[in-house]
Structure formats: structure tokens, C-alpha cells
Length: 476
Image (cartoon, rainbow, N blue to C red; front, side, top):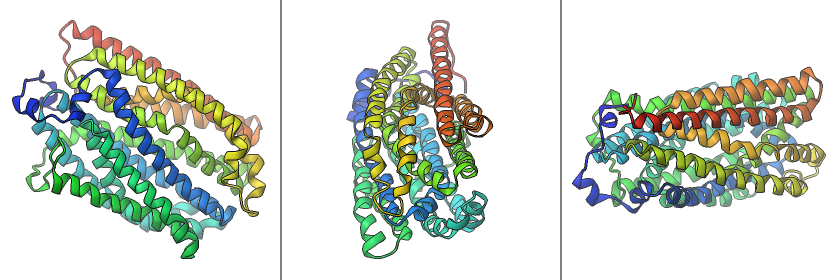
């Protein structure tokens, strides 16, 4: 944390004159902030989840092999998106904290550093993913669907720079409370992808490559809109000027202090997906991978409202922390968790009842019809996953918003590697429950991991509030 962030909030006349509506919401009533900032994010992320599902649904028409091929790219794509979201969480945390402390120049500097970081990381990551894609997917066990996986992945990963830059820009907008503009950009990307998928996959006859081109074109098009807002229209609260960029190692460290642990969290999630894939291949072959990776897209779609709330928690908690209003952090954590559990319980009931209808989206062709029982089993088991997801998710967001990225990472390690992966292995292989055992292991690990994260966050917030009365000084 930089000197700017450890100093007490200073009244800044320029800040008061220039605040946008989003910044006013961000620094106001925490419950109102969560509701108003989460709404647009939920809508935007639902649309993004729709276009992620669209790839799987349209590809399913090409057969189980194509679906499995795309499925083997899923954990690698999760690494890319996870790194984008992780670094974005770091940027949101630092920018929001500086806004909370009424330090606009500091917020501008953090945004500039975040974009420079995104460009540098994307260049390295793209080279690795494109050059070493084939040996990677072979190592993951793609076997007979290796060529399909490489065909899809090589195109998607050529767009790495767009994914990182766009998600970093989204993070900056969220940090200043402008989730509506984020919603517009994400919605445009999703709608364009939905239009392009059937055209490129079937009409143009490109198959899995068409799905990949649709994804890259849609995200690149949105980058143009974001560039217009920040560099031409210039009506955002945070100002970006790469020509005025002056490297500051303290700012880079502040962003990476949250961004790297958050990115590692997504990497761990990808590693768990890979582990689950390996376990399923050993138990039931590539068909099980097709079910799990495609079905997991539905799970991700179902938790989108929770993710939308979680991104808002990072910004609101960060602004409250920057302003030393620690009681607000407690309100944010409790309120978000309550709403999240209610949403998750509703989602669980709907998923259980509609499992056959959801399954039909992936099994409408004769080539994939034999997967129907496996899909229904997966969806009805995952109903037990949702209610405990908000506990861990929002607790991690609180730690990220307050600059405790390493704590959030530890919680994710416990949940994914210590609990989920181990339980899936034990129930699926050691105790011989097979495919159902793997899914139950995921559920059990999530319940335990979410509970640990929630209790940890409550204890942390309690310490913050108690320390405030004794002259609390924030640590780096």
C-alpha cells in the first residue's frame, strides 16, 4: 500500500467538484451502493455468460468430439480470463481506495499503471499459449480431439491482448462506480458474439474455428468503444493518459499486491478443472469431460448474479477502507451475503426442476444424445453447490477490496486444492463412487471452503472495527 493510501483522507476541493454520480454512490450508503452497482453488473455478466454458453451450445451441434475439444481449452481460457479478472481486481481495489481517500491524481495514476501492466502481461501470455498450445493440450489428455482443441485455442489466444485490456478497463470503470457503462460494453460484446456464432460456425462452415473467431471479433470490437470513452469523449471520473504515464514501483506493487493473488485464485480454479478432467477421463473417458466442462458453463451462468455482486463488494469495500469507514465494510459483507444466499437458493431450485430442459441445450443432435443421463446427474448434484458459494465469494471480495490479496488467495487454496480436489479424488476414485462421487466431492469442498472464508472475513472485519477506536493504522 502506498503512502497515499496510509494517509488520512484529505478534503480535496477538486475532488468534490468533479465527482461523478458513480463515485457519489460508491461513497454513500453501502446497501444502496451494493444494489445500484450490482444491478448493471449482473445484467452485463448474464449476457457474457450467455455468449459463453452460446459457444458450447452451437459447438454441441458439431458432435461430442467438438464439444470435448473446446472443453479441453476451457481451463486454459479460464487462466486467461482469470488473469484478466485478477489484475482487474487489483486495479479496482487501488483505484477505489484512492477515490475513497479523495486522491484523484492517485486514482488516475493507478489506472494508467493498470493498463500498462495489462499490455505487458498479455504479450507474454499470448506467446506462451500460442507457441506451446499443442503440447499443453496433449498433456491435458485431449488424445483423439487434440486437433480440434488446437484449432479452437490457437485462434482464441491470439486475442489475448484484447481480453486483458478490456477487462482492465472494465475494472477501472467499476472502481469509480460506473457499472452502467460497463454493462453497455459487455452487453455489446455478448450480443455481437451471439450473432456471429451461428454465422461463422455453420453458414461459413468454419466449425470450431468459427466459434473462436466470433469470440475474438466481439471482444476486439468492444475495445474500440472503450478507447472512445476514455481517450476521445473523456467523460469518466478517472482520466487515462499513457503519454503522461510515469512509472511508480509503489503503484505497481499496490496493484499486484491484490492482482497477483487474485489471478492465482483463478489459476487455481483452472488447475482444479484440469484435475477434475483427469479424474473423469480415468473414470469415464472424454464424454465425461464434455459433460463436466459444458455443464460447468451452466454453473458459471447460475452464479453470475453472485459474481456481479462480488465485483461491487470489491469497489464498495475498497472505498470504505480508503475513507476509514470500517463499519461500512461489515454492512457490505452481511448485506451482500444475505442477498447472495437468497439468490443461490432460488437458483438451486430452478436448476433441479429444469435439469432435463437445460440438458437439451447440449444434446439436441444425434451425436450427443447419449450424454443426456450424465448431464442431468451433473446439474441435479450441482444444486447443492450454489447456496454456499456466496459465503466464500463475498468474503474474498472483502479481502481484495481492503488490499489483503494474499488472505483471499489462501482461502481459495483451501477451497479448491485442499477441499474440492481432494474430496473429488477420494469420492470418485478411492471410494469408488465414480462420476457421481466426483460431483459430490466438488459440492462438499465448496461447502467447507465457503464456510471457512466467511468466518475468516467476519473475524477480520471485527478486528478492523475494534482497532479503529485505538488509533488503527492500516498496514501495507
